[in-house]
Length: 226
Image (cartoon, rainbow, N blue to C red; front, side):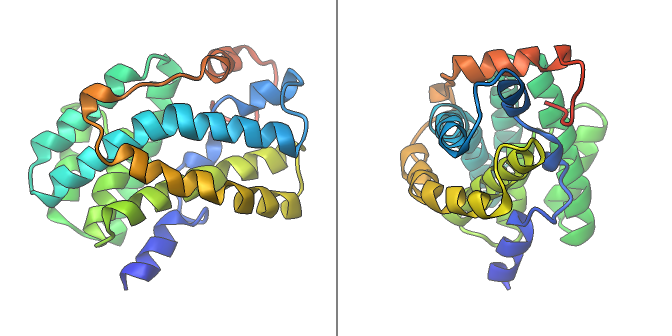
């Protein structure tokens, strides 16, 4: 059953709201910095290696472990650490929105006492409920291993961005599948790199992507929330 839950959670059909995010890709496409498959792969590798893998996944793992130990204070600490490391206000906002959307769906799909507590904490502002944090707890709830939870999170992220690239006209559906296959080694390498990192070791180093994310609100026409 947990294999089916893994597929359900990582499927773009799962309504977590993350499909509305481009993580700066929309700006880079409009600026002409991402024009083809090669450019897109560079963008995705930088995002995975220098930001998602060193911040989001680290926080996700600590949230997963806190949930596994029944220690929601650890989950909240991971949530606060990721929030403080997320310097772009729009990213904090979209992280909260997509996390709360995921939490709402998860509470109704996989009833669990921890999810109910987190849902109440988020509602009263006791925690931010960022998407990677909620994803980590949901992974534990549906009995996924640490590594499978990370893979589900990364697969969901990458397929969502490939969908964004299709909508932006950068690639077609067949190219998207080719890119996904080519990125498999990069996706699989993230867990071994992140598994031993503490919350104090989180960092992000993707200045071009960060600038694109900050410029997104200035676009006259937008398909995505970020």
